[in-house]
Image (cartoon, rainbow, N blue to C red; front, top):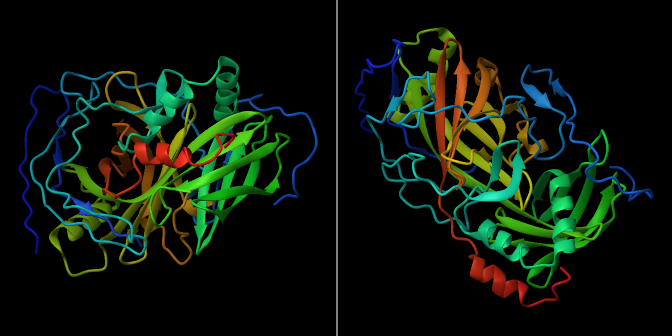
Length: 423
């Protein structure tokens, strides 16, 4: 049994009598059409509306949004923060106990290089947030890794002529969502484009072409013309990859990442209602190595980030008794700091929008107990904090990427030097 230590810390300077504790958890996760193009006048970027939400018959909110798109909250401004970085008016958390667990490798981990997660938890302080160049109001869309690839792409993008830069940004900002889908050895790429009131879907097939994969059109509901592109795997499993596509004369780059996540929890203290207790029992059982199937089996995340455009992350938590809790969050951060408050969305089946497993045969009891989810911290390097409102209390999930070896920006530069720059 793993050791577990809890120390309570009072915060008398706050009016609230509630206190929050850090539950010593470092749970490292294992893996577990339309007809072809229509004719017409391209209308990329004509609106910014998102389709309405729906619900599945299991009671878990399910969006009808295009691949990778997350409905945006109307209140997407960062909260004011105090000297300690906590939102003003809320109780700060105190890190008081930790358990170190070595990550396990999963079914898709042949190319990963998990390292001992140690006892550290992301503190989100003094982080260099890596941005895509896209914005939502006063917030910036961010990367999901510190591998330097987005920064290199942004630098390269500034080196082309002004007219080409304009075309490139137009297509980047018209991309509402993207999903790289792996099914055995087959790979496809779905892109949702903003063309009028209803997002249009472009589906591309990836086929081996030397040291990259050529993208060809499978189907499209868009009027905008797909003019070619490629997909480059960044590691052997191709769960991390990037695409460069050309649409209506503009080039867009999209980075995809799917990885195991280290998971730390902060749990609000002195909450005793049944819904909250049920959720926390899974956390405590996992930390303490309790002999039960009511434990967390894995947490994985899949993300996309568009150069000069949107970025989003899907997260899937699975338990050993076949529970599934899935959500999606836009990857956003304020100009200064890492604290914010942005609504996230629960999903019954995240495979609709992300490169995550389907949830057929799973139960959604835990998911239904979560009343709301929000992104409360994002360091723009792959670590996020998500607040789960459950019953009368809250649980915070702090997620960070399990490291894996991928191509470096220098590797990517050398690769692209081997073929014509038309693509």
